Each structure stands twice: as structure tokens, then as C-alpha cells.
Image (tube, rainbow, N blue to C red; front, side, top):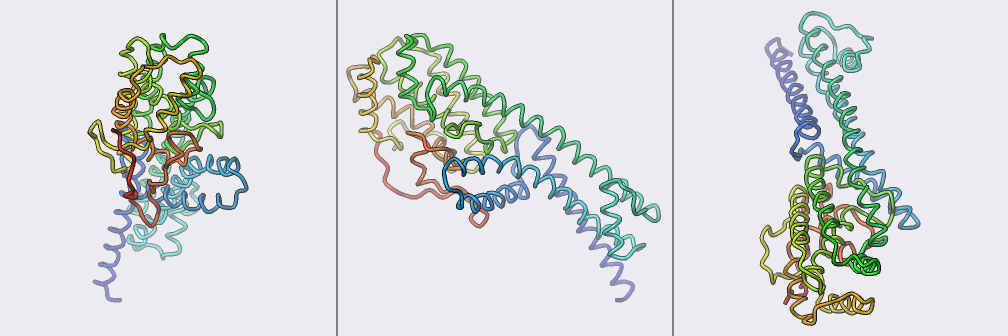
Length: 375
């Protein structure tokens, strides 16, 4: 190789290495530091690739409980793998940059890069240019460790805050949670006319979920401690309960229920849109939903049999309920499909239409089947 060609090769090698380093730093900063969660290819591909691995392993599980136990490791493990990819990428990116300095062979550059990022000092750089590269790589390595140390406690703090109300809902709405069980239990303790505090608590919960699950989207995949519960099925049960209280229950009007429902569907829409779910941001009140009219009528029969006071005009109640449900129906079902939530009536039991992204097909696909009309 001629002198000019060698110089050009070293310049290109340095440029490629520098480009990879900045891409990794952008991925780490946008994933961990930026308060508004931003998608990066490295992060999304890592999660999709690890999801494929865990789904392959899940096929060999003998029961749904074992599969749930396996999938509970998916998100934490992927975060650690992602951090490893960042570190490995920095090591590999600095190798051609050291080589571009022209003071060592390619094999020696590998040792220098690994020594610099770990600050072990087993290989000393030669010359001021290599020393500058070594200092930069060491700072990046320490920065990645600092980000990981600060990021994981934040994740688990937000997870704990989310799960507190999820566990409480098991007491109030069963496991898996349903609006039917929630209303029946409230009737038994004479609480149907005093639900404002409950709705206010869940309004705060939805605000927490919207902020945390879009800033730290890995939280979406963190599974609840109880195998029959999930943050998203709990959200669906609460939203259905508020929609039923506004449309079908014969109780005094509760403004807080409407505020909570709006807070809830806005939160689910924000999380769903972050993950690229193609949902209608402003659906008409009579748009199709995934609940059949007959299902609604059977639910009303069950509520009436348990002594829950209902409005006489059930047709109008159905239209009102469908008008509320349409605001969160698609986001709820899509997120249930995304996290593979445990089977729960009126939410994760009807996810067949929604096909989440995979490593080979990184976009959502919704089967064009006829859905029951809302009217």
C-alpha cells in the first residue's frame, strides 16, 4: 500500500471509529439522560432481539406461570445487555482510532482499547495523540458506568411506585382485575357513591405512568410481581370501571370519574404512540370497539344480580359506555399485546388483531377484521 493510500485508510478508519463512538453516546444519552424518552436504533434493536430470544425460550415452558416467570427477566436482562453493547461498541470503535495514530499494530490496538475503557492500564498508549484517545475512552467508560449506576435505581424506584397501586387493586378488583369484580366489591362495602378518592388516586397513577413509561420505556416491559396481574390490565380494569360508573350505574354523577378516565386514556395513548402503535388520536364516539354489545349486556345482568344499581335504559348505557371506551380501546389492547399481559377479560383476552414489532418486522400490524359496531 502506498503512503497516500495508507494515510487515507487511517483517516477513514478514524472517521468510522469516531462516528460509532458518537452514535453510542447518543444512544446512551437519549435512552438514559433525556427526560423525554427517545427511540434509538441500537436500543430498539436490542430489545427486539432479546425479545426473540426470550420468546424462543418461552416455547419450551410447560405452563403459563413458568413462561411469566421467564418473561419477568426479559426487561432487566435486556438493560444489562444494552449497557454491555455500549461498552463493547466503544472498545471496538476506538480500535481503528488507535490504529489511525500509526504507532501500533492492529492487535496491539485491541489491547490498548480494552485497557483504556476499563482503566486497568495494562497497555500504555504511545505519544500524545494516543494518550488523548486513551483519556477520552476512559472517561466514556466511567461515564457509562455512572449512567448505569444511576439509571437502575431510578427504574426500580418508578417500578415500585407503579406496583404499589397494582397490588392494592388485587384486593379491590381480583386477580386478574376486572371492572365487574371491582364494582361488586365496592357494592358490598357500600362504597359506590363515595368513589371520588379512588378515582383521584388513579388519576395520579395514570400521570405517573405517562411520565415514567415514556421517559423510561423499558418500564413497560417490567412485569408485576403477581403472575395474574399487569400494570396494563389494571389500567384497563380501572378505565372500564370509571366508564361503567359514568354510563351504566344509577349513582350520583361523579366528576372525578370523568377526569380520571381522561387522564387514563391520554396516558395509554402517549405510551402507545411512543411504541409506534397506529391509533386514531381522535376517534368518533360511534367508532368500533373490541367489546360486543352482548358482552356489555351480560355484564349488566351480572351487576344487577349482585345488587349493583343500574340505569333502566341499557341501550343508552351501552352507547355511553362505547363512547367512553373508544378513547382507550385500541391503545389498551395494543399495549396488552406488546407486554404479553396475562389473560384478563375485556383487555388481554382479545389481542389477536395486534401483532407487535419483531426484529425482522419492526412495525405494528393490525389485522383488518370486522369489529363489532359501537351502536
